[in-house]
Length: 124
Image (tube, rainbow, N blue to C red; front, side, top):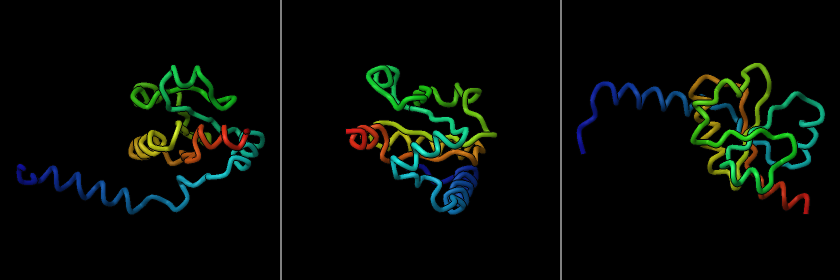
């Protein structure tokens, strides 16, 4: 393994500061009923970060589809003046998407860790 360079040290420091600055609960909407309420009562933008084929097979009503691998290329579809909620099928891509947007300066983004599986189970 190559030794750390000064720029790698800077990156490590920046990432450590970022991770320490994550507000509690930013990834914490864990209740399907609370999400339903927020969808009805707020101007929440719900983004499904699964692949288009997964979205086509079923999604939460009102969600827009921006696959995680294309998130950065679609920032024009992610508002910074409205609350934004991301979800996927199990939570993994949600976390990556939330962290990506946070690193890009979005402070209005949360994740829905129950994800589509949790939504389907609750709708059962």
